[in-house]
Length: 372
Picture 1 (spheres, one colour):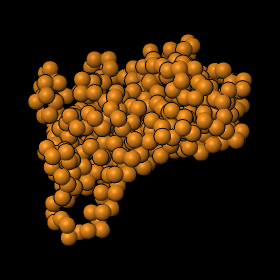
Picture 2 (cartoon, one colour):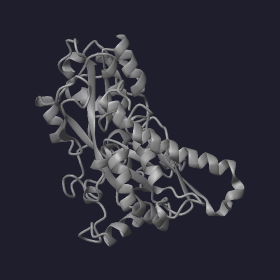
Picture 3 (cartoon, one colour):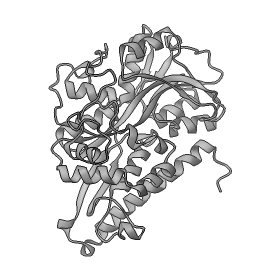
Picture 4 (tube, one colour):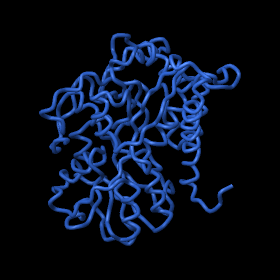
């Protein structure tokens, strides 16, 4: 028992344990090469996000689910049900933008990303205008809804995004999806980076600076509970700002990847229910990864043993469901993933491998600055 930890923080511990098991397996294998033939081993990297966000623990959970190092106990005997010989590693990154950059260069085989950023990268639009379309970007699954958190101290006079004018605000580090979304949201409220005192911090340091009074607000986009927000709430009273005003509603109308969502009462210590914005978190893979491998990864993702891991490994795990895996995808399904979903009866039309929130119409392009 851990009575000194808030509930939100306790709920994050199973994912950390799952990640540790995956990394430990990889380390032991590296230390004992005689235990398996090198040709039997395949490595698979999943770009995630910062350690204070949600992508990192979720990515660790996924890596654990699909890994099956040589010498592992058989699936039917209670062992790993992942892809035989596969060692998947969740790699900490700055977030969606960096993930897609590293996937484009081949440094990463796969990654997690916000749906809107993935769509813009594949099409060469929005913040990627002027860059070549990333046509090798394909999808394994839609995972869950991420939420926009705009965090302030409870006693702060900041009640709306418009109140951030002249304030010191962390809007996310370069390479993060948070930074792109923060810029889009600020623009909807008539603000730009010149109108605030911007800081470009990771979620953990941003939470620390808020508690210490060095920043007055910080943005983070992630599936709740986000570790950095939970840690800040445990140290000082905080509030989350809502986006239920006219400017917030205009974002969902102009940008269909944004949806209205709610962070429930008590998700963070002392924080009441907050209406905010959501965007899909999706698992993407390079199109040149072999069909057989991605088929095996997708099958392992939805194996019954993985269901238990998802349900108990992280608070967002129960939201990862086969029924919604092909909904609202920002990129076409990889042929290996599409093959599995056809076999599972998820795809009603075997030829339809790409769905967008608004039918076949691409989402409007936001007035966001270019990704560097």
